[in-house]
Length: 186
Image (cartoon, rainbow, N blue to C red; front, top):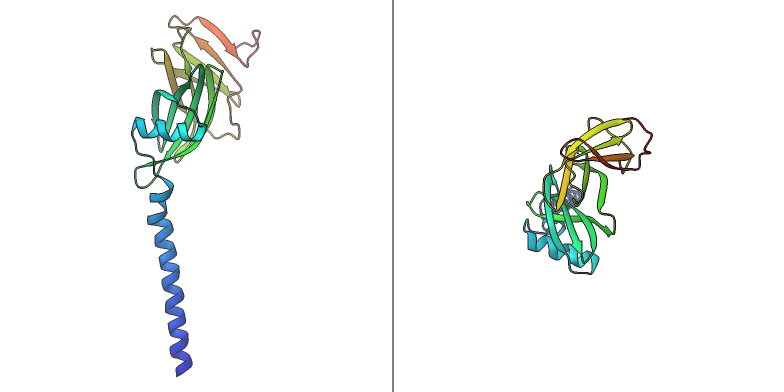
């Protein structure tokens, strides 16, 4: 009888430990992982800590559970991707910065993949046609000095970047090509 009681206590203890671990990873861990407020100043501070330089946020855009940020560091352009957690705060997934004024990328969200292109709009870009695995995607570009253009993919891809893009003005005239030869017919 003593052994049955001892095994019962051990079983209950193990069950309690498993429950505590489940509750802590499901409900408590997000409060430590997702700690960036949905506020421009908090996001700028988080990015600045990551890149170890002061940043100026130019634009932010939401896509499903992601927030895309276009920022500048002096004369460089940067991008950041944040993921929204169950506590409605964000974690910073990655940042990148450099001299490229147009920054294309394919991103994963909780609902699928998206193509996103962001950058400076000094050329009067009105739309971008981009190619991913032979599929064409047309992204409208809002007016202004900076832009973030996002479109969901119709399928899935292993690619991290579009294979090429063509920039157009508001009259449909081609401005320039990125990663596509001039003689390639669209």
